[in-house]
Image (cartoon, rainbow, N blue to C red; front, side, top):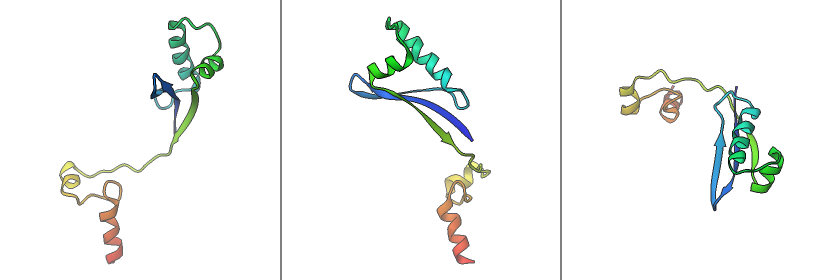
Length: 96
C-alpha cells in the first residue's frame, strides 16, 4: 500500500494540487507548503496558512495492483490480459 499526501485548494480561481512523492510523509508536504509561505513573507503556522488559503491536506492510499506482463504488440492489437484488457479477458471466461 502506497500513500500520497495532497494539499488541495483554489489559487486565483483555479484548483491547485500540491503533492509529495509516493511514500513520503505528511511532514514533507507541510515543509514544502511552508517554504512557499515563507517566500510570500507569511509568518504563521501551517494550519493558519491553510485556513487563509482555504486549503486542506488529504491522504490518498493506493493499493498494490497486479502488473501487466504483455508486450506492446499484444496491447496494441487489443488481445491483452486481465490487467491491460479486462473486458477481452472476461469474454474467455464466459465462453468456457
